[in-house]
Length: 258
Picture 1 (spheres, rainbow, N blue to C red):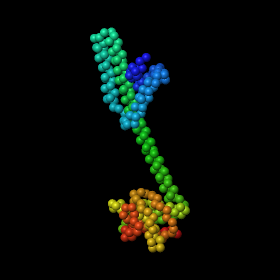
Picture 2 (cartoon, one colour):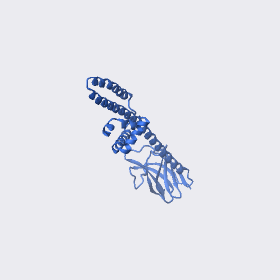
Picture 3 (cartoon, one colour):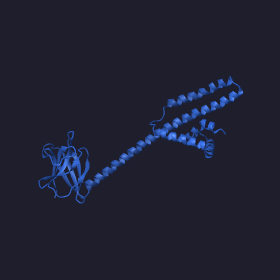
Picture 4 (cartoon, rainbow, N blue to C red):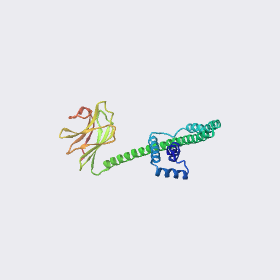
């Protein structure tokens, strides 16, 4: 058997597309078992489908199928006119060629539809999976935040707005066992470009740095802070933080709880 002609006929594309009868599919599988070139071609077709499917975002237009079918319908009449003008041997050769061309066209349509539809659903599945992953991450984040704000091990300190921003507020949580510090922003103005808010602990008249934070995040872990303090304060500093507090730009302050 001429397996090169068999491969070129388009029947393997139809097999991969699932359009062959059970008997025809079994014959293809038998050939693939005993003839490596057939199996290699099947693997190559499947690989091409998988690669292309990852790049397709929607199913193909119905106009593609309509045009391809019209081409198929024209093919027999053209072949028939040609066969009438040739000898019997040529007639047989062209019949085989026409049949192979027909199979190739049908196989191409089948693959186009299969790849387009598979690609569409592949991307839909990817979108759903990505959305699910994001949702799971949000749930995990919210769960972690809830653990912080409800933990009995945390000391809760409310910070209130000062004259520069009287409506601002925030809450600081300090784990009394690990001394981890968290800040939950209630309301703070957007800082000017190149500036950032910084949290300080006032102890014996000295401001001790706890860390900088972003105004647009609801709950953030800052650092670990050891020791007692009289109050917590938030100032506006240059981006990256300062070694000393700029007290004239203090936005929030709150007394330590006993």
